[in-house]
Image (cartoon, rainbow, N blue to C red; front, side, top):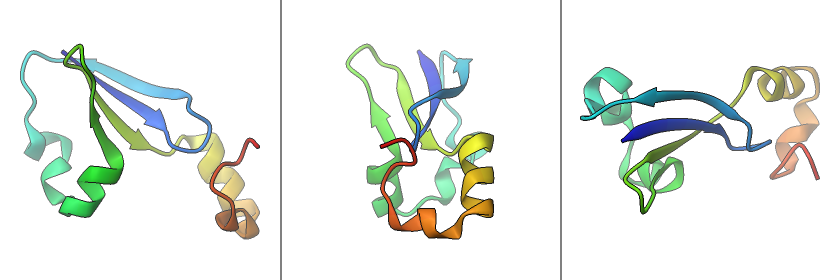
Length: 76
């Protein structure tokens, strides 16, 4: 099983961990609310866990252009 981190804004793969078991505490996933879990974590049919995050480029774009928070995706 892989844990794949994908930017929620540009869909770029940020990182990937190849793990047989997932320790939610080690990954910090235990701190998410139920609503956040539903929005950010997706269990794929092949058993991979996809976690929505933000990449450095998109974070920098938001920092420089706060009005971007009004859009769902930076790349339209």
